[in-house]
Amino acid sequence: MAVDEKLLTLFSYYRDAEIRGATLLLKLMQRLDDPDAQVKLSKHLEEETHHAWLWTKRITDLGGVPVRVDDGYQRRIGREIGIPKTYEQLFALTVVVEERAQHRYLAHAASPTVDPETRALLHEVTKDEKWHIAWMENKLREMAGSEGQARVDDLLARYREVDRRVFRELEAKEREAFGFSLSETPAS
Ligand SMILES: [Fe+2]
Ligand SMILES: [Fe+2]
Image (cartoon, rainbow, N blue to C red; front, side):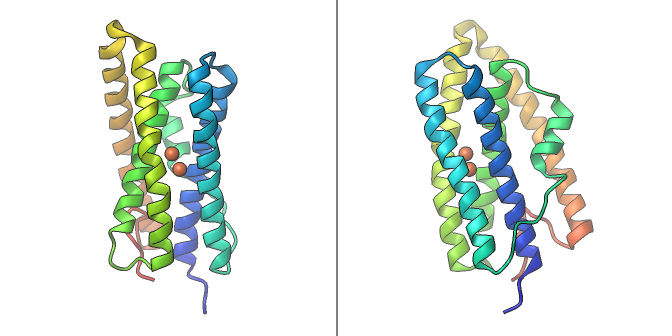
């Protein structure tokens, strides 16, 4: 069976997003002095690295190797918003990129062309993303306190706006480069 290069590229993008998400969590773990957050970050990090492995395994099961991703979603969003400097910025960025991952995975899983193994994998990673988003937004709001809620709302709204713009650009670039967008499921 010929290796489907489009699928390998798509899964490599997913894998890259998981690895970069894990990198953000490691940064937070090294800085944050909050025992409850340390426990949750440890579990969260374990799951993101597991997701990266699951995508890697899917790629190798299909007879391929991961494709290098130089210009993926996280790198683009990082260029737009700059290096997050505060805990609030790190948490808010993680919430927004997790929301994007969840959205992409759900859209892909809903596609009629997705194969059963990939669909099962998409469901497995999506169920973890749900609690990732929930605990991080709760912790972000807890840390900000009652007087900080409007600030958090503004930060999330600003990052979501950047996310939508970056994602639209990425889709356009992908259509140009591959003839399909990674937010659509390539016919396999
Ligand atoms: Fe993940
Ligand atoms: Fe996640």
